[in-house]
Image 1 (cartoon, rainbow over the protein chains, first blue to last red):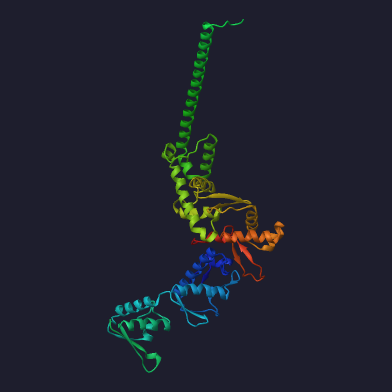
Image 2 (cartoon, each protein chain N blue to C red):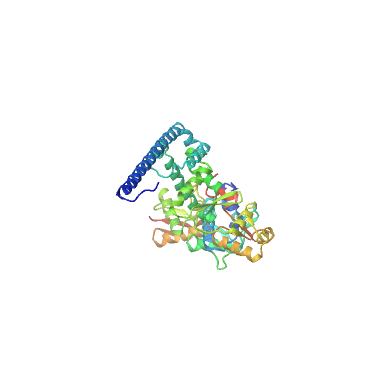
Length: 179
Length: 250
């Protein structure tokens, strides 16, 4: 079994035709399904939040069988994820894609749980601490993408569960929970 | 001597006919009894044999296959019914029904990948992995027998031979000779190109493309435009060794 670091690649990754968009619908549906699962799975375990379509990405080519996905194929797979709410285009040219293995609402839930677990129901925490602090170490929040975090915070802010306050620089932006 | 007509003559003739009939019936009865007796002996011997070699039949695939052959020669089908002494004695019916269910399962699970055509060898391999408890006890012969039993379902399970390999078909696709020849050609590398088909089979390009398109539509082939020579390759998951790892954690 081929591996990317610690990540185990599925068998289809070694089968050349999976790197060409299939013309027959049923076959293509199956192909898309496999790629979708692979991309989400990989991003989740490797904590990849953004995929650049024109940049190097380990899943987009397989040197062992000398195949790589065309731009069209990359865009097709990611578009399906976008349709299913598992990804979002970050620009109108579809050059960058934000991967949401958890939907934004789910991230918001995770944040609330994080606050409860750390006794922060009425507490204050900085954005930096959420992303890289000792409390978040080993949790899913560790290293969370800034865009995703902001969107999750916004949802909670609208529900009145917290207030985001700005400091003098972006470094000391913080959150006051009121759960 | 000429018989004279009269009531006496007619009665004699009728009596003679009755006699003949009685005699005939007797002979037939004796023959049937003899047959019955022989069958009973045979049956009890076969039972004795089966009882004696019960474990061998259950555990040894080669022995099982020979036992089946012997039964077939004398016109007994141990799988014909799940009731009766064979089932009670050997549980052999259950064994094949179980295999049958598992085969259907595997065929369905791999269908999206191979379009409903699977290599017998791969099927056996997956079957053995599924039956971890008695790994290695299921032979190809057992697979073929179980598939044979699936035919009564009318769901189009069929074994087709392509070159030396056997493929199990679980979709009602009609493969013609052209398709078979392409599959045979593909066994070498797992794929073919249009050029190769034309050259090796001396076909016109129309014929080659037509056959390949059908195989694509049926989900039995996949295209690959990624090779550096720029020539489109047609891959066949049902003949590629790599497909044996699909859905299986090694």
